[in-house]
Image (tube, rainbow, N blue to C red; front, top):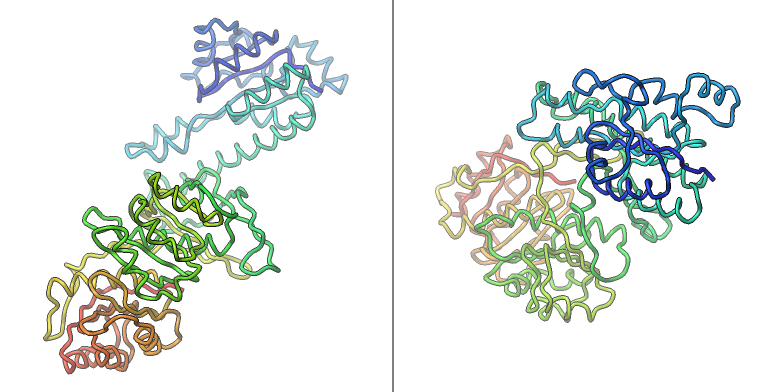
Length: 519
């Protein structure tokens, strides 16, 4: 058990500082401090000794040098179990330091600021702070180090109840400290490689990930596979930081499908978009609908493929209301994700105790954001497919031109298509999906599946294809079923033949100029 007689407190984040300072002072702990921390403590009536009084030297270089001194680091690094270390401390009149409470300049926040300059960001690279943290963490056998304000109460409680800090507590604090400095140095290195003042690569030359396990599903995709869910340390958290309001624990497959549903729902988050409901099964949409209300949108989404909707994941682009909860009562759903839930919805959905309700912010891609996928021995990295689409920029080489209603339907189909596994064909009307063909090796087979799955009238519908048609057979198949307009990227060596096929059938074809493969 380590008693604490002397503490060095130097923090940028002043959260909980007064409680820590007053708590240590009540326990008779001498507090050594620097700059703004010392002033804040003194203003609150907490006795404090300035670092300069210990070192015998003032802070210099606008505060760049204040704690970097043998009388500070000797007090932190001395191993009190070794007699020669104790003798040296006594010889040089260096007071031993038992507790180091330090947190660092917020470098990552400074670097991410829109108006960040190179010189200003460099000034936010902490030197003394990480040095003290690492020194104390190295010497955890003799010193306790605290980098997280949330740990102040734990430390004070242990000192009050047990008179010191146990080996287990100090070891855990040291582990947290080293992880903290590792993340800090990584942020600086990443900024130097890709930060302000340089022309960064689209993807960095070196990637360092720090992941923290946050969930452990019972198993992975299958019961014989162990699994875990990790969040990126320093990031926004899984799904931007979600709350599970009720239901069973989330499974691996639940999370994959919820991710797909949220990302597709986000394509309908614009200010001019109607209430929209997305139904996903096995990482593919099996129904998407929009309408004047969420209930109308849900009924349209469900009508596309009511069989596949059993055991699905549902995402909505509006706060989940009581009317939708009532309309969904008869359908077995695994997971619902929404930006918020009205009280009436929570009451009705709460009758399904196993239904998992996730409250999470809408997915909002960051420009330049990228993703990793594992392959044996490495990873594939790419920018996420977040390119904006504007139908006003599409071209139409066919004699038939889409009217406003068909163009709106094509835009709807194109959004759903980009969230569907390749080869993808999506048939819709203006308000809902009608048939979806996903993940086929042949594009014409995706066309046939989309048409065969259709439960609604195909006459007057439109279709979207995530990539170009390599042959005219896909266009022939869709047109014969009643499709009147098609959106596709174009770019095939047979584009002229494909456009000619559309003209033969008297249907419109728009070329978007961008492919949306999703493997």
